[in-house]
Length: 249
Image 1 (cartoon, rainbow, N blue to C red):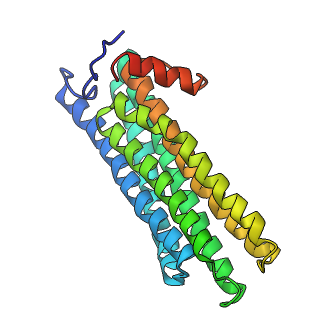
Image 2: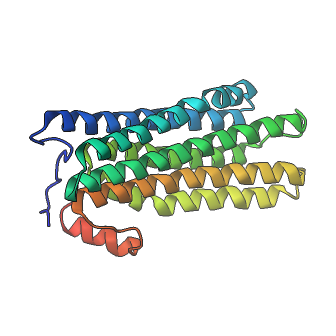
């Protein structure tokens, strides 16, 4: 079992240099996907909160970029498996990267969902869709939490950084607290002028942001799986964090 020091880049050091290049290409595709998803999420929330409908349409126009990159990632996974027939650690890396690509793609879908809700809100009427200051602030807070977690999960993939992955787990309570804050405000404002369709659209958007944070946690789990060889998906979070911090991560 690895010691307390970070394991470094496990996708380098093979005797077959071409193998290193193939793994680097696969991970590069995933990192590019992650960058697009962060940009898409921020633009979608801006469309929702600031009523910038043009931003929402741009998000939907750019959604295929992430989908095409996801297809590229799948193809690269198949190529690596067929050409190299990886085993042990190498197979762990390839399978984990495949799962990570899936989570990144699904996070991109959530950003598109928020954009669609922003468009729906505009169609309900210009005046009636205005969000008050508290609700705007609550959505921005939730957006910041989700995007920060997701950005750091992509950063963790760059070097299979366990310490970075642990910080994502530590941020989960704040993500859920922010999501609860939005739902609470919507419940209160449901009695102050918001019609049911507006409330549903906003709740859907809040849930999508929370799910983006969840995808970040899923990615962090795969990072730890690669680095430490442990499947920690069903481990108690508090105990897991304490254990990994105790080990120096």
